[in-house]
Image 1 (cartoon, helix red, strand yellow):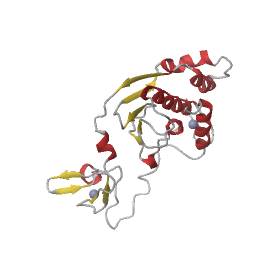
Image 2 (cartoon, protein in one colour):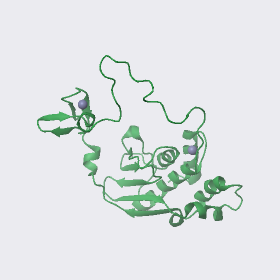
Image 3 (cartoon, protein in one colour):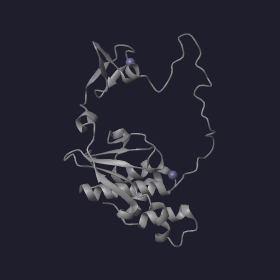
Image 4 (cartoon, protein in one colour):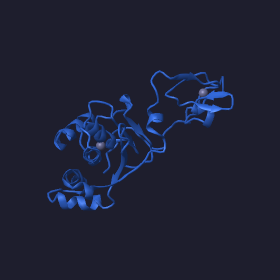
Length: 216
Ligand SMILES: [Zn+2]
Ligand SMILES: [Zn+2]
């Protein structure tokens, strides 16, 4: 196991700075290594991590675990929560970890030199014992690990849109094999054929130009 300082350096390099949520991600990975008795950051694909938000937190989780979307060892189930489930795909042991409800307020006790709340969390989260920083429990996945991982080489085409579907993500609807977008509706709308796409439709509600500050 690398030290917390080494893991935070990896995360900060990915992220171009260090912030409290990265510390939470790194610390969650370290807790998972301890509870699941795994050598992390891993050099294989044994650990599967499911994070419940995107953003800074995930860089910390990746630094501590070596789980990545590109390696199919990190998945995002976007519940908007700084929480994650760590699954040992060999033993099927799994733990879900979330911040302790009092973690924010306790952080200052561990960082008396902090000049503000943000700094108290940045430093305090690195020093707090896991049982004050997190709550965790053993869980069972509702979709089996084998179904999440699927088999390499499996591919079919959607009977409606014709696009290729990997990893057994197709939906069988009667006689048809459909992609999830065709079966359940997609996260995007297509312009009616022949029409220009509606330029206003995808506009963000808030201005995202410039730097978006990290929150705690
Ligand atoms: Zn950040
Ligand atoms: Zn389709």
